[in-house]
Length: 578
Image (spheres, rainbow, N blue to C red):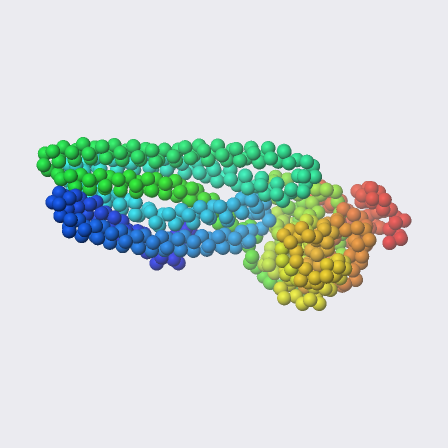
């Protein structure tokens, strides 16, 4: 709640004005039953048409003024709620962008999307209705009760009984429904996750003819959500009938006691009508209040979920030094490095030690699941190692600002990702404002210029969402070119040529070797042909170093490397011909 008040604070004026104008509207509404009572007792009973016309004009004036106040209140409430929602959404997005891979892995992408969209929308709607009704409805309820007692104390006694009973019913249902709405929102996360997985992997689903299986899976998730929503909906639905029953019993009591007072001559017919109107006003406002409480219980559950993301502290903060050591230290140095993912007892990497000087190339090879990509993610500090030390140009990585590190490290991920927009915009991600000459140079190195020119749109080539108008190999070459724009000091190619044919792959490696003299290059690949010309080769086996040296050295004495080469028909003779 404190965080919500923080977002409301800059909009104090409009936030205060919304309930204030609603209270003014309610004040005028409370005078209406008294005017109606006077019309009955004076105008109709006395057959005074002029008085009736005067009271009619007064009723219209009260309605018009109240309507104006209501519109003004709703404008201020909507503006305050939208402003708070916008600020909260922007801050949440900025906060999520401070997370390391560890936090994103733990929370889940679909959950983060749901918190930013659905949950903040719930909070925004809840705040809007709160400002419009939460003060107005209790004000009308207690105001109507006070006005009823000014009409006649004995006839208004049912009010004193009905209102406390209604309050008990409303808050009891609130306390029961709030935890249930949290479960509903959690299940909504699961539905969103299933939807996201299905849509992002739609080609795989259809390739394996798993449409029916996915439909059944989705049906199970939505059925679970349906049953949870129905259950909490039934409990919430008790509010309206219960409030109607209590209020109608109150109206019956008012008619009974009021009728007796009329027969005794202590009360007029107009006053009885005024009491019934006040009871009806209470009914209307309590129904609004009941529905508001249901909405607020959803909003509070959503606010708690949003706060849970805000409360997650990034394990890697964007703070630290912005300078490397002045001496000629290794570009990358691993000293007995170990790493374990969050929640995992076993280390994915352990005992990793090697050094690479500026301008050298290191190849990393190993079986599936040996930790190659994990090692690559440690260099740009997407994760922090759990043991040992990693040094970049002589500096302990943990003392350097992550954004500074990434200015000097170009990463080509295993799964190529391009963004909707022009090719020029995609290429300028690495270096904002990069010239066309720099971009074309990077495209030449990445062997991408030929297919770009074949599209006949130059750097204005429009890339669709997810690069759906490009082949897998084209996307890989563009991501390599993007990393090369701006000439980073360290380039990491994480199995980034898997979709390329052998000829294009060989041309790419040759161009990188010839065009990146001072660049330290990490080549992570399953292919021996991709890494055998590297200055150093690190062989990984189940997260542990199983060999380190040149291709020839490893081929002579490393059994695992020999096995990999043998499986790919790469031997000493082939190495000699390269």
